[in-house]
Image (cartoon, rainbow, N blue to C red; front, top):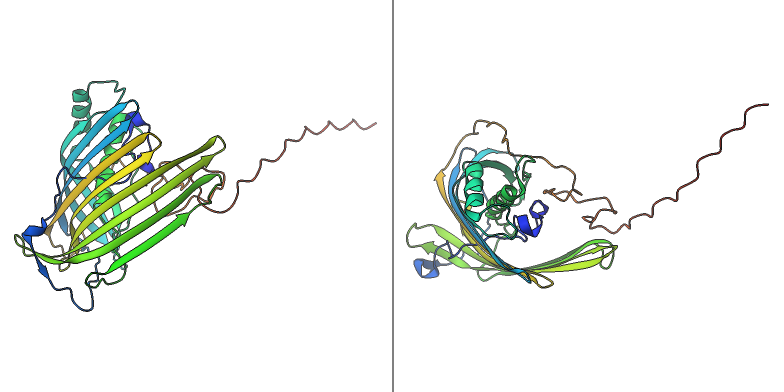
Length: 350
């Protein structure tokens, strides 16, 4: 889960991973003809080219249920994503400009009216450009943190926009997939029962098949992925647990090498609180690109946080401080050294 999204409930950007469409954005199965999967399998990889551009649509709905009541948030926006550069490893720098923002944000204890808040957030964020990196498997890095000059309410919407953009790149399997192939992954991080975070995560995925879109004639690989994640945070005052379950469907263009759509549903539970998030995104290539794009001006809304132990850090590095609540290693936090009395003043020489 992206720590850049960790906020209080009143100004939560996105209390758990995932975004979702009100209705699926990808091709319906009845609009696709099934094709045979090659015997050697399908090797799926993002082959991004400098200068290429993509048009995207992102939709998200979040429902938060707690003792205090039920709250809903909906966010929709369009994206123009341009590949600025690609290095020798295939990792790309991209710039995503957001437009046509539609916000219906309902949060408790709002200091202003919902209409005023939605209008202000749209005014600030309409046309904003967000830059980040994505590699050939779809792993996103170098995600910007919100700038300190924005109010908390606007930051909450910006966080969800960023999460929407980065969630629109699904991390693909590294090995070729044959017809009907499934894969399972499991991972644990941290020290169970010790101070800090302990995470258990399982993933089950499958290649549903290869299809041809009746409308666009694209050849699309369809993936289905189910995930289950349990996270326990232990402090000196106690521990809390969060359970996250999600189901995701991906359509990937096997000729143009990019994801055309992603739809997912996620449910997160923490004690009596439940968050249900639905997310959908579609992408269509606008230009193919063939040369390195001209460097663009730095994005004024980016605030770089390099400390992996910072709650707002997002990136590949792990927190190495065993005394931080974000530490997930094996080392215990050392006890503080006992204080020693001040040295007695030396007696004057006689």
